[in-house]
Image (cartoon, rainbow, N blue to C red; front, side):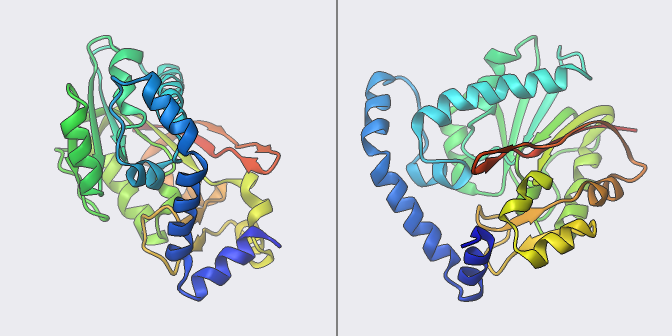
Length: 267
């Protein structure tokens, strides 16, 4: 059965959040031995509560920490092609429990400042208590951010637009531009054509017509709220306010897919 068809049935029945909580319990049970072993081998590493980790990524301690460090290096390399990463102020939009930003002081360094922001107060509380040397801001599901205009030299948002409604795409894009300085760089990831295989036929038709595909009937911003963005839709969203520096399409990798990567420069 097509995964999109099944999840849409769960959404229509109002059971998607319950199904996701069941998945969380199964993943916690399945990964318990590996997670306990990783924690025992790394007693000095602060780890967020299990559900915070699961809600923002996966419930796998090694992937959270070591994969987060790899992703921090990935962010550095992408931003570094378009911005000298020295004495810059970098924003992690949708930082969750710090999976990526916690590594940036070591991975990037060079006098840069780091700020993370998220709408989950539990994630921000945990980050403030466990990740020193980084500023953390609490925002709402809708803008604004608690930052002045032109504050940040670089902004990255990894799989954040993928959980927002059509109206929120415009509101948050405008807000990210507001807090980014002219000439600053934005790094965003989205669900592109590599995800067509998990769509239903009506969803593919909508996507192929260059329209945003939304799977809702759940709480917006939550991991089970899904948005799929055709490139033409994003080019229209970006408009004349930013130049597209790179668009790297995602790739299908067996049953999985990688997200599209967009690098923009604010004009």
